[in-house]
Image (cartoon, rainbow, N blue to C red; front, top):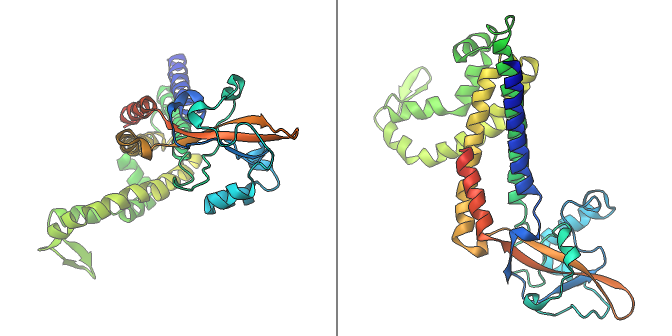
Length: 318
């Protein structure tokens, strides 16, 4: 039985790593090369084009200054770092650019344009989803492993708390539930009003306000759950891994469901319009006539099929 639990938990971790690898380690095969976002090839000074997943991108001397600069004013950043040498690639149509095949295996670059039409930062969402999925997968693997091994243990199988025991043994859980606001929202919908100075208020109009403010409550539920309930539960879980394993498993599944819904909606938006999709740059080195070297690149959006795969992942997680 313990071997089966270990195998199942390892399969969960492997699935999480596979999805993370799909989201985070993007390459040229993910991009729609038939429809470049940038019209012509843009060439900058050597090492001036910020790359994804590059050690220099994090530990370089001017890394964070450059990061702020090209997000604050992309056109100014490009103008200050244009390639000053004469290169045959500069100004060539991206649809007809000659790109060495070995350059396609490298990391994709940050989408930089010299006209500033598309906002910078459109290459971050998919990677952020990948890191979130990796974190949730790790938590899920750990919680499932501890929970199942505890149930198989003659010593700890009675020490796994359910929600009734949590309310009794951890009184602060009631405070978290109150801060989450669901009880307040439920009382409005069923017409019981809210307690104010030991008196019930809004009993007659509570249902109206509950329905009217439902989108606000829904947004608060999502935000409060992820920035309040989950972090507090995780901290308590560190000190009580066996007792809180069942509740933590439920909370993690609910958090992943929220994550899956958000990813699905985001993927639908990307699928509806190519202009809304994530963009990345394909870069390659180009020698100048003076004997120097510049880095050139073109910007492309994600393929529609990749957005469909992201939608499938989101629906599957939800």
